[in-house]
Image 1 (tube, helix red, strand yellow):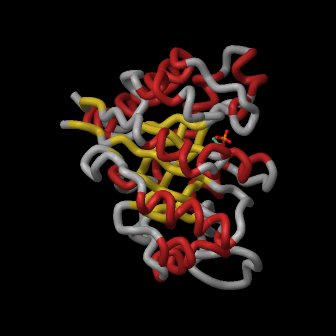
Image 2 (spheres, helix red, strand yellow):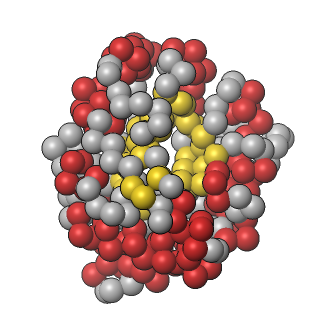
Image 3 (cartoon, protein in one colour):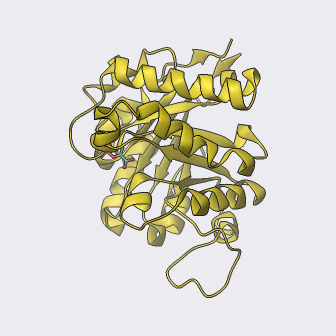
Length: 255
Ligand code: PEP
């Protein structure tokens, strides 16, 4: 068995109608590795999700950057899983460090969202990762374990989860984790899955890396045994760079 590579582009709060159209038309005509080799996902701001969904060819999927755990109601500014489904999305990013840090989302709230997305029939790009101070004090694995434990009982089906390991100190900073640092964290995540869920889930779940991935550093990272792809912020806004990153697809054996 092989874990298909997975590359997602998180546009964050960036882009215009015109720039997103340009990126997606470039992506649509680019030569990408086949669907069997790599999943390709783009995640524009919610106001552009319908636009993107209408523009991308079926080879490329569109993800929401966030959604609420409730189905509907008085949650001004939010979107629901049902709305994502209504416009044909298959993926939602949950627990991005900017949602945790800037918007104060707790592990508990994130777990509810993860459950809502999976129960709603969509799949989750679930983000975890330590702060610089955690790494400096040797707590990286503790933080990762705690963030994973928080969703353990909220995931009925791990085939609907891709775990994005995104060390906070590497996001948007230009400081990328070394291949060894990323590999160590990914290996720990897989061993946590093996101990807390099952060996099969540990072998099959895609664990992708995020944090200053670029066209020039992706090839080295992609070779690591436990790195199954990337969540890309800044570089996903440059279509040619994102295509280069997608093209480093390097599926790994799940055995
Ligand atoms: C991200 O937004 O998830 C991210 C990894 O950003 P960047 O690639 O810009 O560090």
